[in-house]
Length: 232
Image (cartoon, rainbow, N blue to C red; front, side, top):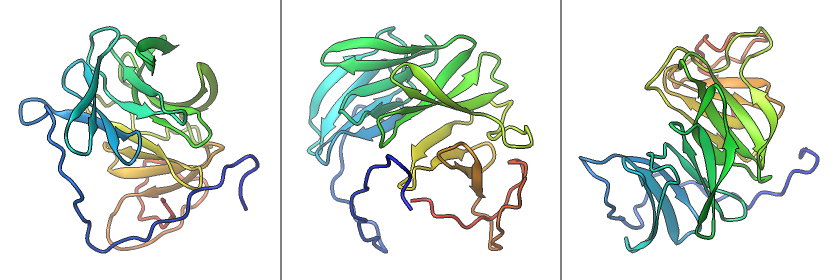
């Protein structure tokens, strides 16, 4: 049953056995400059950011359509395109999440004691922001409607951290799936952590062979299982 207020999803596209490369897009990134994030605005254009202070919009022909420098001049860590088509990006050095409206950059969220890392836009138009404390010992996911905080996901029912802590270099990539679950790729834990819309832990997918376990309630997220769950 669909959640109240949930929007209908587009029809599923059939999965293919062998991925097909439709096009190669040459960018300024390469061996000397890493790409950090890619986000599609449509089927024809993609935003990218990497190891400099620029965000670049490319079309599928590899042509540079537009480039925007970050407001602070710092390197953005992640970017996303909102439901309304606006670009948002995280600036952990400035502790801000920023939005690009036309050609103007506005600070949407300013944090204190935390730094934003990764971000995604949800089907409802909210933003999910992964953040880390200044001492880099704690991480959490926060849902925002505009600049208003709506939800925080940090601990499970046993007050254990949902996401691995005491880490510096391991990212937490985040997306919302078609069930409106929040899916986080926790590189330190070598797992995909899935919580439902209410922030309750659903499953941990580690890819470990080949036993399948259901998640016994309650279970610390540090426990690594091969869990069957519908991710997409």
